[in-house]
Image (tube, rainbow, N blue to C red):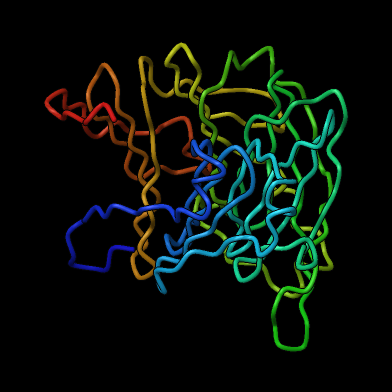
Length: 289
C-alpha cells in the first residue's frame, strides 16, 4: 500500500509456476481493501499473495485445488470468498488467508439453484451477489470469534433479494460501496454488539456502483430498486482509499470517452443527488492493457 508522502509505484507480480502450470490462464483477481492481500484464480483452484511478507499461499492438496472452479471471488477483511461451481450448482466458500484447505473453511453454503453468479463484493458488514440475469442477493456477514479474537466461524444471513433486470442492462463491473451513517460518513468496523444484533434500518440498504456494457456508470440503491446515472461512455472506474487520519470522504474516478472524471467528495448520504464533477480532462491517456 502507498504510504503518506510516497509516490504510487507499480510492481510486476509473477505467479508461482506450481499454480499457473496447471491452471493457466488467470480468470479472476481481487485485492483486499487495505491493499495487503491479493487473490487470483485460474481454471481451477485459488492462489493467495501476501503483500507484506511477499509470499504466495497455495492449496496443500492438489485434489482439493482441482475441485475448485472459481466463478467469482472477493475479500472480506482477510478472508477470501470464492464462488465455486460444482456440477450444476454453486457454493460460497470462505477461506482464511493463512490456510487454503477444506478443513479450514470458515463458511460453506449452497447458493440458490437456477442462478448463475456473476459478481460478488463486500463491505464492512455485507456481501452482495449478482447473477447473470441481474438477480441481486444481499447477505449480512456474522463472524464469531475465539478467545484469541480470531474469527472462528462465519454465518450468512440473507436480508434482501430483488431482480434488477428492469434497471440494469448487461453489467460489466460492480462495486459495493462502504456503509455510511446519516451524515454520509463511513461507519466503523464490526463490533461484538453487531454480531448479535441487527444494524439500524438506515444501514440495511446496499448501494452499488454498476458499469453496464453500454458504458453507463450508475449508482444503484438495491432497497428501492432505483439507479442514478452518473456518467456515460465509461470504460473503467475505481474508488480511492480514504486516509484514516483525514476526513476527506471517498473519491470516485471514471475513465472513458470524456477522459478522466472525478467526483470529490463522493458523498453517499443525503447529498447523493448533488454529486459534484470536479474534473473532465480528456488529455489523460491510459495503456489499453
